[in-house]
Length: 76
Image 1 (cartoon, rainbow, N blue to C red):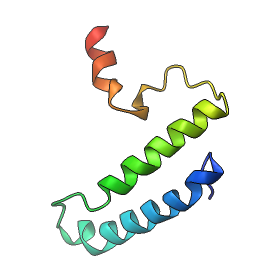
Image 2 (tube, rainbow, N blue to C red):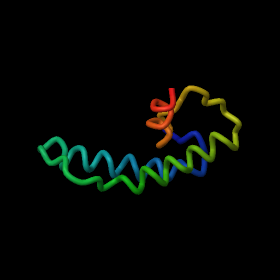
Image 3 (tube, rainbow, N blue to C red):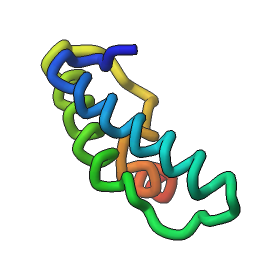
Image 4 (cartoon, helix red, strand yellow):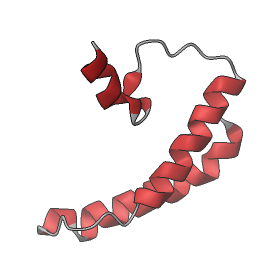
């Protein structure tokens, strides 16, 4: 499946491969330590956020898109 932004599709594939490898080779065998795909995920997330803004896709109420989640819950 492609990403919301064409420029993000390759990052999505890289992250998906990393996550699937970690999940199958580590997590399912009881090793949940570390975050080998965290930096890839952050790069992909930033790309998606940029694509959403460029395409003017409304995302009101979708606070899970970033670190503002905790801030939004605390400010209510």
